Image (cartoon, rainbow, N blue to C red; front, side):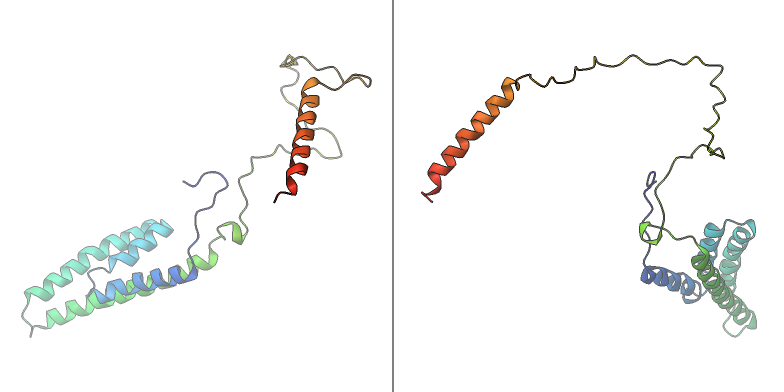
Length: 188
């Protein structure tokens, strides 16, 4: 997306901490409705099937729990149990996300030119040891061709040759300009 040698922009530590806090508290403060949000973030970053499964299972658990809380009378203990499960799901998913995210940012390779990433370098051929030139596997099967020169070589300048007329013209114009500036220098 950023091309060869260009690193993606890095997030500041303040941005990372803000996102970590928002993902962590989303599940608990929404009474478990958004408990899947930090789990999906972990699944995207890690990419393991178990994380995806956990994130997808949290959706019906939280929706089902909220349906139970809303459908039973307030004095029924099943509503209390469902609300406890939902709030625990939100808190545990947030804690799981924070633990994973801290570990992820500690082990992540540094990004960006300030942290030492280098630009894209094309792969180099393997080096031959002991000062021998590198092997050329196709040298015997392909005839060596030298391309014709794209232009005729110019003869070297001769010592007694006069300077080209264009250079003389430019020198004359510069001399005229210098004289003109000297004359009008005192008028300022």
